[in-house]
Image (cartoon, rainbow, N blue to C red; front, top):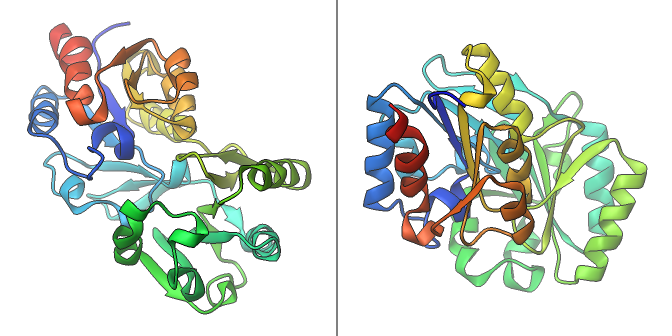
Length: 276
């Protein structure tokens, strides 16, 4: 491994604290990395328009990987430079199955997240963590039915299915795996995130690195959950935070402090800036 030229980090559970703040140490680490010429890339399961304002306000962010790698955004050019997304027909079938078995579903289209008004009547009973209820209201567009969005030629970045029963979650995982050509991952313990075949944060990151003529051996990636595994394994330095899923820790080259203890900053100074 040579000098780190790009840092890609997951947001929730990795770069952000549990209450969605950016620690002062992490802010300074981003500033120092960008000043040294390192490309800093948020790589999130969120759609573009559900990104936290405090992240978007950071100086030096040109590229963002969103919706688990379904899109790469060039903020300076204001365009999507890469996408790998689900057809509206397939999305309608998967969402329809979710509704048939009585679980909460969301779709991500054009950087925006949509869910049904009836789920918003009681997000908690549908499996949403009580801490995230206000965030759901702040970031979701509430619609009467998914047909309002899933129209001909619509491309879907991601489908999020939320469960209150883990047995049903595993049955649904098997159903989707056996009937649709998709990628399935998760970012919390009770959801399934469905993307297009070949869609991942790692695939999108490798596209961006290649475009910028950066070798993946000169990339550091950080994460905490299953949707981060691919980019952690592809990077020259793959980092898991202390609060990460145990499987992710085993996939990583090293483990740093938790998201609440500025593990991101620790990794930047240990593996990127100290080699400058």
